[in-house]
Image (cartoon, rainbow, N blue to C red):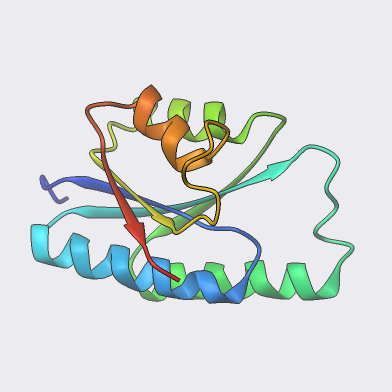
Length: 127
């Protein structure tokens, strides 16, 4: 088992998140680290009933597997809290996220994670 950094890639229900997993994989290989992928679904959101979203998650599971990562799907009302708790519990040292259009907002997930997890390196991948 790798003793390098633990890298967590956060994905949404979009196939375009493949680029985030690929970036995380490159970082993990370069640092001899471990790669994990997480998707946090809001409680009440039925992605299994939506063929496009279900297909996208299946696709991301496959990409994660090819990248050597486990993909975890969790349900929660508070996405930031859930990601932060997962990161703390699993000793994550780096989080990879996609760029957000409202980065300056205090409600932005990236900013909230930076505040909540000051010792974790947050990598933002441009669109």
